[in-house]
Amino acid sequence: MVEKPSILIAYDGSPAARAAVSAAGTLFAPGDAIVLTVWEPGLAEMMLVPDATGMGSTMLPFDPSVSREVEAANEEHAKRVAEEGARLAGEAGLDAEAVAVEDLTDPAGAIVAAADERGVRAIVVGSRGLGALKSKLLGSTSKEILGRSSQPVVVVRHTDDQ
Image 1 (spheres, rainbow, N blue to C red):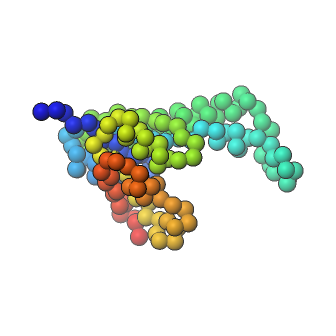
Image 2 (cartoon, rainbow, N blue to C red; image 1 turned 90 degrees about the horizontal axis):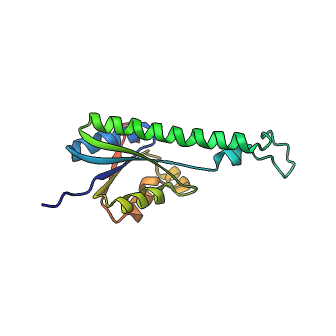
Image 3 (cartoon, helix red, strand yellow; image 1 turned 45 degrees about the vertical axis):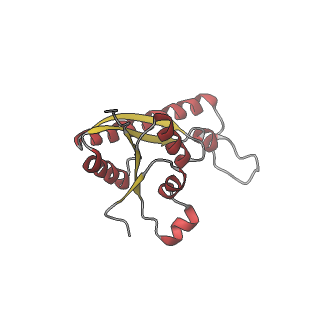
């Protein structure tokens, strides 16, 4: 019998993501899992570059060394979040690997790409329960993953969802 690839759990540390980890344990344990956190590089530069429009911005002057420090801190934070998710997945009965990936503009795309690259059998993601209007205005990562993934997607509703 060929061993099935692991599942991928999208994890950002939110209550919805914690619910997704718990549900993944219930549905897929024992088994292996990848707990994936997506982080956005370049945020430091967006926050630290002075406003060229002269509109009275209070942004800090650009300092490349500060930008590098902020980027490194963002990446380390993402790694810690992924490790927290992997620890929770372990407590839920899964053998979990923590992974942090960077993505500039498309977290759902980064999650689907990671799932494809690793050949996982399913993606588990939490639902934030944005509601109809907010979901239409802001979009939904879980909805994007559902529309783009070739793997089955388990969307876990958090108890606070409306």
